[in-house]
Image (cartoon, rainbow over all chains, first blue to last red; front, top):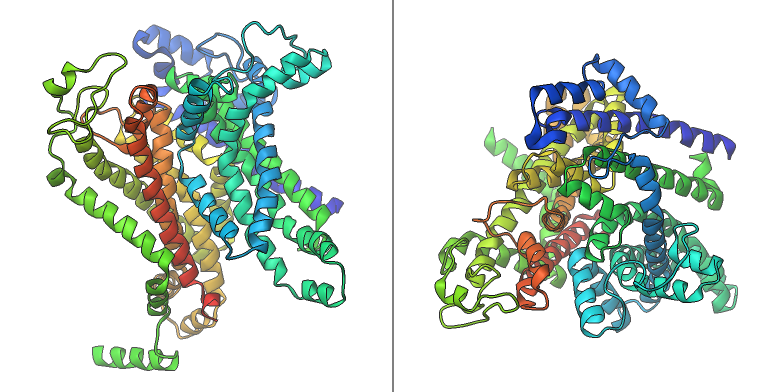
Length: 334
Length: 306
């Protein structure tokens, strides 16, 4: 087991190094170089030279990469050109909102997706299955931001059932402890704040959950169908085991292995979907930060977010692989 | 020579039960209602896109006094004489824009997919054919591209351009597909390398380039073509997402469904049709490509013939 973990960890290192090279090269491939991009219309030769010196762009390329690596490792991503604040502290401030949203979305997708996928497989070919399959196909084809605006317009604005945007209503007095609005309310015993935060979470989380939900349903369905046809399930049934035991201990347990990998892969989808969802619901998380960075061409921010998104994705998938090896001993051997 | 090749091919077909995998797959596709639905949707889309300039009564950028007369904040004129779908938010004929947009949407989707496919196939072929350190290096590179969540990758590429344009959208969406195609092709190339027919032609002394290009590649490309069909759907959706983030085609003279949908969000309470028409068009077309791709995958799967 330890050998597997070490081997997997070693495999990640070249990926991360190449990734840093890619991100390093990315900023330097800007037309006219980063200085022109940073300054825009205000570019004068003196200012460009000044910025280039400031970024160390007058040094040899290898030295530059070395310095860049050093800065990244120490968490220095430069300062945002929009706010003038260090990018790292910005990320720390915006991160809880996005984590909160993604976790709730992933919970919705998993808690709804696995039972739905299982039921669809069990009643294969019946109306429930057909409806589920069609639903998953349509779910992936709907542009995320369109779905968000639909929910916002018809449920929040027209029917007034839920708040249309933001994380908390104005007038709610909430103490900021961790940055996670729901958790803060519970910690400080301001339960009305928690409830208000939850109400704000519903629509964005549902929007963000659609695509992961569709994917999880499809994989669960396919995987359960696979296991249902396996010899050991027939044997278990023939032994006269109670159907509930066969379903839970034999079918579901084995069928969930590929599903766990898929859930790990969804983290990437959530990060990307958050950019769109947060823009629709004015959420004020990492996604909003990224969207603003695009409009205002804030390259230090973009660079940091690009690197962070990829690192999170790589680390999560590493963790999934390791947990997979814990669940399924066969993986360790291959 | 040709007669010999033809005779040999006929003999091979006979030995194989009379049908090649391709014709077998095609036969199965024709019986599959899902495949037919997908093919009809895609076919209609392509026909409309090709004929759009003839079908559209007006230009994409043309504004009309009749439409602009009633255009003020809070009202956008609906269907009227000569304008079956009414106006858009700037007093242009909505029907014409919907029709013309099909062409741009198809163009962006197809070009992005084809460019991604071409680059991916080159990388995958080289990696799969040479193996060794070339393979390792190329696959580490694709790993890195795959490590970036795909929309984030498209955003970072599109954000590099000083001004967003149709070209930057196409390139950004194309790059997302490259690692997927490369990995897929490399995998099936590796499987080919070990197969008997490749060992046989290598032993016969056929040139290496011929082995790769004439014996391995044609047999390995199937899954990649299926993936390309599915990628067309995501390419259209990704392009729409880029438009929504302000990284879309900036040319006001061109209409594109993704951009129309992105811009119509602001008028959802005034005239929802402006958003619904392009949204439904995107959903239906994406669904069409997905259905076609999925049934193609099933039809080409040799396991399915049992």
